[in-house]
Amino acid sequence: MNENKSKISPAAKEVLKIIESHQFQAYFVGGCVRDSLLKKDITDIDIATSASPEEIMDIFSAVIPIGLEHGTVLVRHQQESYEITTFRTESTYSNQRHPDKVVFVTDIKEDLARRDFTINAMAMNYRGELVDPFFGQTDLQQRLIRTVRQPEERFQEDALRIIRALRFSSQLGFTIDKAALIEMKRLAPSLEQISVERITQEMEKFFQGDAIQSGLQYLKETKIACFLPILKKSPQLVEQIPEKLTPFQSFGEVIAFFYLLDPTYSIAAWTKAWKCSNKEKNVAKHLVENVERWLQEGRTNWLVYNLEEACFSMFIHLLADVYNNRTLRLQELLYIKEKLPILSRKELCIDGKWLQNHFIEKKSGPWIGQVLQEIEYLVVTGQLNNNLLEIKEWIQCHPPESD
Image 1 (cartoon, rainbow, N blue to C red):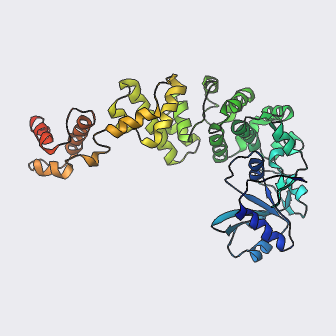
Image 2: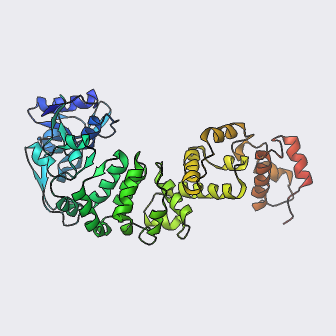
Image 3: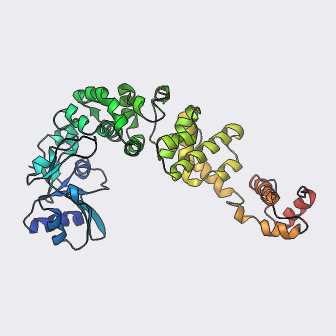
């Protein structure tokens, strides 16, 4: 064991102390140990213990049994949640996802031996002492992604680990071990047996990686895209990705990016194939709609008015990476938005009810929305002031068409 200064919170360490006070072993494991050693911010904390799920439920008052068959419970402690799993080994993976059999053990090293990569196969106690049987700390220092034991065995157990290797390269900028890379290329066809939802989850993190250029090189080299939704039909798309690609903010932005590179497949086709959420689908559609508006009109008040502020950075990113336009700045969009006369149609001096009362002889219908949209456009573009008198005068000069 080596001693390390940990970035893990005192509250999380207290959970381990409590378990140890009941004569059981307990360690932080996986990504939180890796990120702690890299001095990165820690989001999820996983704990492994020699205690059984039932024993953990006896120790803590707030426990949710989220996966008893795999030895996992969720403990609530000081307003935080911690997944706690009993030390275990796993048998074969006939479905390339779940082990056919889980066996609980008492040795943390046996538990670490089932994990995917050495940098994820370390354990740390609350004192900061490290258990590192596969030299993960050395691989961190050498910036190397290497499987625990034989890569063929690890990737055959769960082919998603092939995508995870790419993801860690994109997130950390690490080199993938040569032996692992050979097996990733050879076993890539087995990705077609993995659920799309799991692949999408990993690829979203891949495209958000701070070192995405590193991951992109491996994506191109391994030709893994030939086994991914839509991309397997248009593998040339990966070659069209610019080498100086910068991180994406959402998978909706990724979909918009590929669509703008090649509109052969619709946004609906992309989001359906990748099983995206409606939120991601809407983000993709919104970005594409406004990029196309920019292509037609340039940077106008109407463009900024229609573009959601949450999408400003993604919009700028797409212009840069798809059209090599790197002149637009976030502050410029924010300044334009701040100066807009209105921020939504609700801020107009009139509404549909006012129009209906003003043209009492006309039946309610699409004309109301059409008039409001025209006035909205004129106000936003500075051709008409948002003033009741001026709007009334404009309407008198431009009365709605007769039914």
